[in-house]
Amino acid sequence: MDQCSREYYYFDTYIEASVYAQNVSDGEAALDAAADVFERVHRLMNRFDEGSDIYRVNYAARGAGPVAVDAETFDLLRTALSYCEQSGGAFDIGIGALSDLWGFGAGAGGSDNDPFSDDVSPPDSDQIDIAIGVSGYQKIILYEDELSVETPPGLLIDLGSIAKGYAVQMAANAMRGMGITSAIINAGGNVYVIGEKPSPIGTYDAAASEGSNDGGGSRLWNVGVQYPRSAPDDEYLAIIPASDTAIVTSGDYARYYIHDGARYHHIIDPETGSPARASISVTVTAPDSALADYLSTAVFVLGPEKGMGLVEAYPGAEALIVAPDMSVTASPGFAGLTD
Image (cartoon, rainbow, N blue to C red; front, side):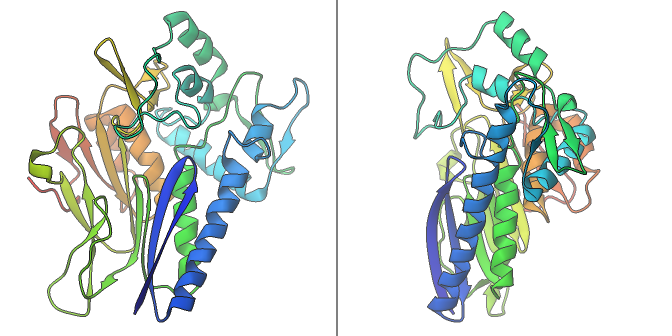
């Protein structure tokens, strides 16, 4: 089989995809189909693009009433709001104002390889209280008959914690529709694998490398989970054997800044209005990438005990949680923990 690979840039993230096809033409066609999906979802749901549905809802004129959106946007909003309820508000798509307040808007940087500017500092308590006051998923109103959305002034919908996972899932589905039975997509911590990887073994990248089963002409994809802090001898915290599975990791090391010795990261606890402190890394595996994306955020906010309780509510989902004291908690069915 022929291997074809491509890199995209959407959702403020570099996305890598690799497919195995009977010939190069089929592989390139599948990568084109994935590109169309990423472009469409980004265009509809990126809140920083002026033409997107979410931007138009967020910045509708006062008193303008409900804003009509595309059916795909509406469906994901409906799903996301149900997840907000199911998580008890640990997951909240209505806290864009808080994310902006903390400096985690578009292109903010913040990883070890893409640092924030030196003058970034946390907001004061009064600013946080004001942002909390205008935020909250409960204030978002969906009108089914009109496929429209209404929010109060100041509330900013942010689908960043689910739209990327959704797009990855839709791209994988599009690849399957093109006849692809072996592929991997890595969207900056959101990984999805289709089928198994044909032999011989190769190396995809440091975040998603391939391993093998015993015998046969194909091998499970092995997805490496990095340590949230410095790794011993460059080892992985877990190496997950996977097929037709989403693996999503949320960590406080992906987008953050240091101020007066304290780390401030992009995963906001909706209750406190500040970066969540119950976890430093969460990896979720699930059959669906949007579900895994949502759960990785909600579980991060909830922490090990409450987070595992939430994971148990979703058949097929498993989780690996690293607490601030570096203790590790894994659900019973989580596979691949290296220690």
